[in-house]
Length: 148
Image 1 (spheres, rainbow, N blue to C red):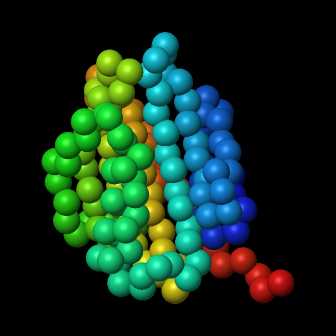
Image 2: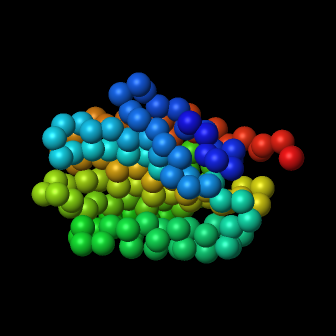
């Protein structure tokens, strides 16, 4: 599944469903069992509001945490790390939704004038899902679309 702007391509198993969430975003998700699901979201933003990774990360991470409203998000780690194979900033954490605990990862990097944010979420009770989501993150492509 390719983002509408063409700057991110995600690959996922047939048990997932993909969708374009806006011009810059694409998502793959699935239900594991009743009331538990997992998802991978990638945002590929041309001409981001900030061209320094720390500032871009601050803005995208704050927006992500705001979307966890009423889910008691707690960050367990923040620091430099690999984000889809690129140097970036990584945040690990957890939250509760619909009575279930979830583990989250958010990472950001800036490359060639574009900002990228990657998020995945999976049920904490299913730690084996992290391996699959990490493989999906490693398989993300970041093409540069041909000029129109």
